[in-house]
Image 1 (cartoon, rainbow, N blue to C red):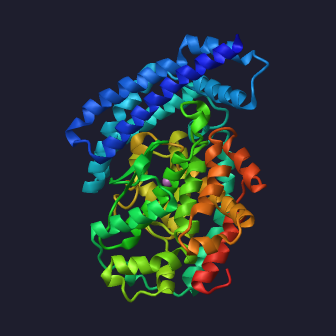
Image 2: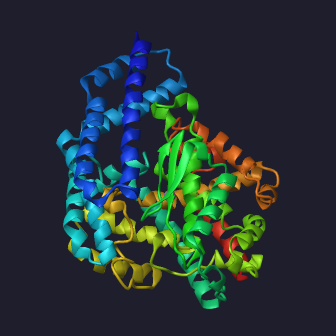
Image 3: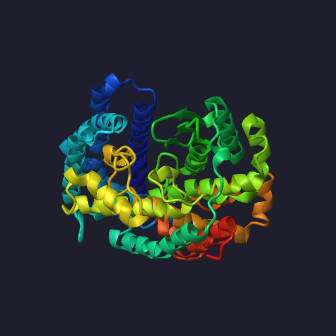
Length: 499
Ligand code: CO
């Protein structure tokens, strides 16, 4: 019976999925509380769990069951979709030898530790040998996975299924041609907002309490999640155990605050996935781009908006006595300063995608053998000069700022830009469908927006491909128009210019 085969597959997948959650938990611990000395041990643990999962999904049993289940005529749309994902996972994983999976898992804690050390000591050489190993293993993986044009496509597929890198490159190019002139106009004609009021000095406890309150208001369920600190803010876990992290800058209010809201957006997505599909291929986020659309939507479209601060400015003034005299407009402008800067996660919305283009070009080049990793610091600095007109003063603020490559995440960066574009399209659609969205945000009521996102995005899990889902929800294929018009409207307002 084919339906029997389907049930057996789902049973297997639920174990595979549970082990994946164990991996996530170990990854979370690695970046939060794990003692440095435990890196080797964690590497062994991760490689054992990783290999177990690998064996599970690539087994002959799965292959046979897949064949059997796919023959059935009576499958529902949901079942067919589930099978499609499972088959894809099986085929991709089967093409990669288990030894390679183990090697990658062993390498990750060591390369992450080396990255942290290199960044702290501002010494690229500490990281270089490990980074070379990461790219070497990923290249091997790409060869096993197969590709038609560039090995980069094989890796991008992990993060944004169905998206070719040539399409991502085109989208980024289109963005750049609109964004660069806007950045220039603002630099030439815009009056730089005063930022001193968000750079005064803030205790960590005040920052934590304020951020936690915002997360709570957004709808983050603390019974099913935690907030901690890490070198690089991230969200991990799913459903009833979702963990977000932030980091604190005592001299700049924005660093922790927007990390809170950003990670909160990721967390709401995970907490809102369809319960009926928990432990199946459909009970997972659809793509990294879609994930990032949730974080960026909350961080920027909501968290950096005037209505949002109408509600939170009085609370902020109460939390931090040194903010007592701050006016709403000042805050709004200080949270939306446009300035080419070195650190991606702290970049404004307008220049953010330029940071992504640098990484996309470099990692794609390195995968294709066109960028020599020995020269990464120089290549990086040159790209920053070309795209943002600035040169990082140190490798810590240059090519060592992001954790991704140390974790083997090559092909991940473009999803950040895709997320920005998805977010703009989603927000445009939400504004169309929800009555007085800004009015409710102004009152600190995020329920209507969250319900809309729950219904249209979160609860769909992986029923559709990311681009198809977005098209269903927004009525338009993925493009840069919504994002560009949002940028124009917002920064014309912030800077009093006609962009
Ligand atoms: Co994110």
